[in-house]
Length: 143
Image (cartoon, rainbow, N blue to C red; front, side, top):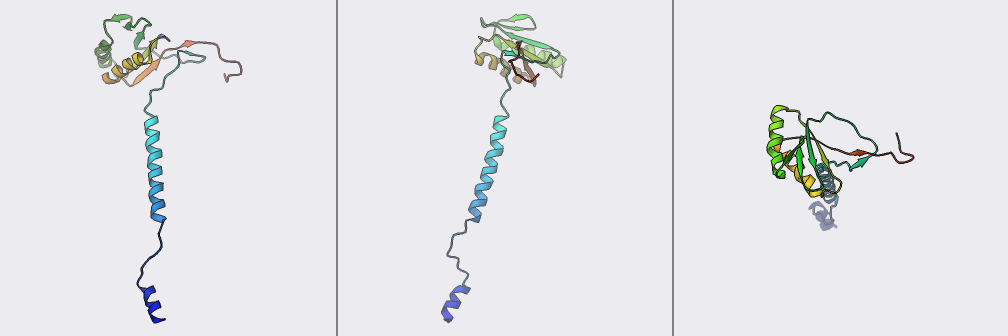
């Protein structure tokens, strides 16, 4: 009997404690949820070529991407798309709060439009909008 009481006093834990395991799993879950939200929020919001409602904004810098592949900036045709970068830097130096409106034909590949967006971001432009053609709202749509 005395030896049995002595074994209990050794403090030897023979069971598995799952509390630290649960704590680590919950921390990992929270980290995953926070980083997933940060990754999703880095996407560029893109309006479709047609929308029932749109807002008008003061256009300071207009970029048009035509269906034949030509790129126009403020009405002047560029020889190649990479020329958007110096034009945007020049306009940004004149207007620090530069707003850019990109109008692309519906048949223009997504990659071409994203190339223009990338060049504008490289120039330091942070306010980019996409031009749309207004259409009638669907029946039952909220006004």
